[in-house]
Image (cartoon, rainbow, N blue to C red; front, side, top):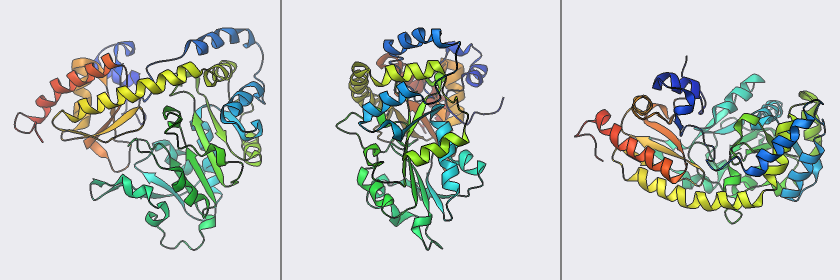
Length: 375
């Protein structure tokens, strides 16, 4: 079984650990440990009565609930079979541009998959330069750092932006996105982790979609509400764009259980607030714990995961954690430019985070050696 491209590949990890998938503590997938909320479970139970009929191709109830949450018209909302399906159609639109398409590197590997599917060769904009992170500069002026050799007309170019950024956890301000919208032909913003940002910290640009025909925003409902198995996301864009996507895809992209779960989830304000309160504390404590371990250098993150630079082989570390502690961390081999010296971990409950820290403290000295186990 080959090394997985994404996190959450429990069958692969369990085979290495020599146990059943359910016995693993999974830090590889950036999924909230708090859900699914009770409201979602109840909605799925109620939806069993709908299993004998096809889903509503208009997804009226779900679109209404999502639109109400964002205070926009339902005409600007299209539910999808996870954010990945919607990224596929966004990539098709990007591939239709006559100019260059840019994306940040390192970045979500599915972007390349989607763009290549439509023959789009894109240019990567590197966040890691000369082995040093300089994320602050990217919040000054995106366009200044684009590889623009040969670009004569910005309006024919596109940008696929992940915000908050995966895998670094960096957040880019709304103003930076606006600088792209004013000059580029199409900007697709993947906000899969934006719902982990409390309203006071939110940098979403969904409220700009009505004013900017060249803006598409894609959201995931599976990470925040702990339901990746249901596959549910949504796009916010101009109605003309969404009608075009609807013609390209399966008319029943979202099943009845996912649609019902989405309505319940987006209306569960108590769960949303509890998640924001949990993350604020858990994020700070896990960062502090990782930062105190020799050989590790975590990057600050506003999301529910951390990218960690490691002085030893992270694939070796991953294997040792699986075999000795049945803990699964995400290696970063599929992220361009990171290789075998970075790993990513989700933020989980306090007890689970502590178990990870203790396991790392146990395994790292055996990989680094006594003399190397120090900064």
